[in-house]
Length: 446
Picture 1 (cartoon, helix red, strand yellow):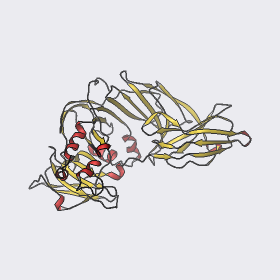
Picture 2: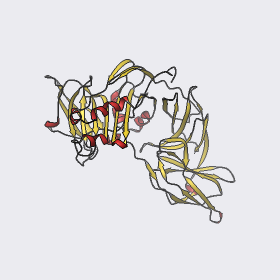
Picture 3: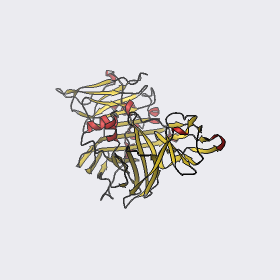
Picture 4: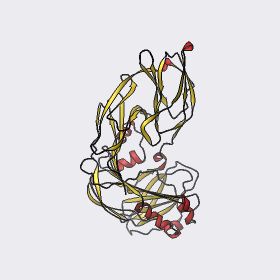
């Protein structure tokens, strides 16, 4: 990001959230009503046993409506929340997830209090917790793979992306044994948790140094027997990486998009801040490629970008354009001056096991160019009445330990509805999926 070294950002990852409501008039506290107002309606889809509350906040942060979430074991059913005589056409939708059936015990709620907040949700929107849920970690069990008909090999590797780390990847091939009399290669594959969808098992021949590869789905169990005839020729591709001048601890990874139907990417390789990266890919691959990089611009500022290319990118110039600054943060107000961003994210967490306290808040909303003020929503009255340290935790989670992010999606083009549908609700169109993979983000820890 150019010319914004002094900017202050901080980040929040938008998480899953949404609701399933059972209407109980004794639990609804409409703090704001409009005599001639319209009904605000929200469609939502929640998970099973999703215990907690949902509340709607007006632009000044005041709570206008709240409702108990359903604790039905049924998940995935589309439900509707109605707010009659609503004063506004958009609301911040907050959802609190709490330990099951703990609503009468402030201490138990404080042990696992998770709040997600989405601002300016238009009337008639859908918020889908099921599709918004992150993919589970892929647990790769150890295995032994026999490959028959293999010429003598020099090296076997299966690069995989580790959870929360892509700097070097990881070679899942723990040991290789070659039996020349039978042209048999036996691989011992280690078990781990991987963040990648797929990898390529690569075999380098001893005599010719040719490389042959076979795509492996890391979300399924490994095959126990293969034949070398299943492997295809590979070729080397190199991408040069031009890092920003003021950057350090850079990480770069590249993927091949080869399964549009299941929206999967194959991890090709990664480098920790290198000026270039060479990987082996199937020969004559045209494909779609995704390049991801992140680096630190200061001790508190991190930049992350992800770009999509129709052809192999021979050179990647890392020069993001997203930018802005925080002029003031006096809870619950944040004053911002933004030059380019589509989404604002704020995240905070207090985790004190010794005191049996855990509280997290996550906020997301649309960004506007220029100066603006964000008013964070008030805590739902049901938790204020419950008392204890809940109101304090709710505020301190942002003021004591938080991060703020500005994110730019080129495909968003100012439409927050696009974000809700394609990012939060994860639309399933392959074309739109590729659009969602391209973004720039700047994050600052407070």
